[in-house]
Length: 211
Figure (tube, rainbow, N blue to C red):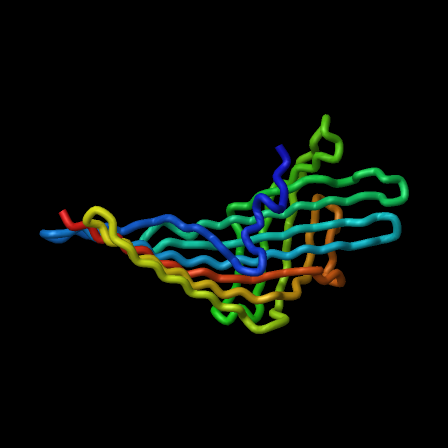
């Protein structure tokens, strides 16, 4: 089944990612579990028109980690829709996922770079999907100051105390670069994004249980 951008893009003004990983420690009179998580991600939307050919592209990439866990988890996604508006024929309608990518998004989120490769499935001919290699290579630059949020919550229940906090930072960005599908240049550097966001999230959770 074809995936949609709305099902994969985790950035919509503010990046929200959920990461797993816990490191329990024991004491004589209690059990304490701590989790610390961090993630960065970028998303962009493009529309390019060449005569009768209109192309829409969505790009998303994120890297997130949990302290003390396995290597960072990478999630990448690209969707492409290309239509001949003169003949109303759909030329490309598909998406691809990546689990290996290179995302650079420094703490200030002022600029960065995303590069990833994946297998892309074109469902324009539903009876004969075509799989091709796709490479996305884009750079982004912030266009406004960052928006920050911080939330903290504490509560107790049946001898267990829960403490959690989450801080997010997001900035609108201008994104430009290339998306190549097989031998076709889907997106060129002269096409800037119509929207884009880069964001980061850091969260902590602590659970203390008294026997």
